[in-house]
Length: 241
Image 1: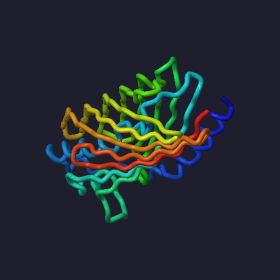
Image 2 (image 1 turned 45 degrees about the vertical axis):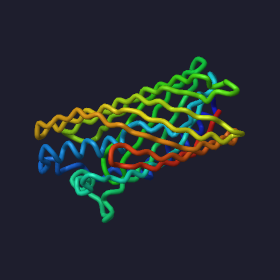
Image 3 (image 1 turned 90 degrees about the vertical axis):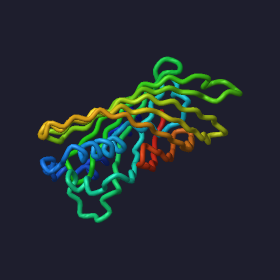
Image 4 (image 1 turned 30 degrees about the horizontal axis):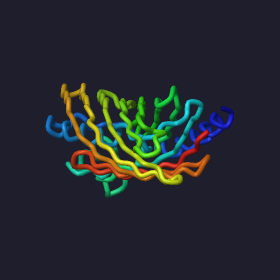
């Protein structure tokens, strides 16, 4: 437990390096209704929960803590990002986000997890959580199957509310510390622009696949995801106790 707390504290120190919030979202007033719909879709791709893990659960007494980076390529209207995230980079259709994630094994087959993220050079903060149940995770011949419920929300933006609720299914099969996995899911997005009176309730489908390396105490995972017209690549380094 002491090791877990110490590792979590160390990773928390890394987050402020990426989370220097020195700019406010300031141009919502210029959005029209159709642009807000596109913006809601694009932000959901970046902020919706991403577990980056295989289907097998942690043991009841185990923790995992990880630091990850996701890169999302926006496809609908990259100029919308300029309205909410003033950036010096000309490549405004690419969004890089660091995240800190923790997960805890509960009763056999059950896991609970949470993450925190912030968008560099803005006041945007994102929080999320998951509850997962795994089947056949100790079976010698059958792959592990998991169902996961997720929730995430965006904060730090005056007059903008954005929440995402998701349901995902995944399958994985381990081979001597190497575990490939794949899955699909649906995300229900609720976005509200209180300044202009816009409201969007959207449904998005995503597909993902990844590879997890378990090296005892250390863990590394890489994943790619397609969500609507946008794609995301992710990498996570973690510790397990």
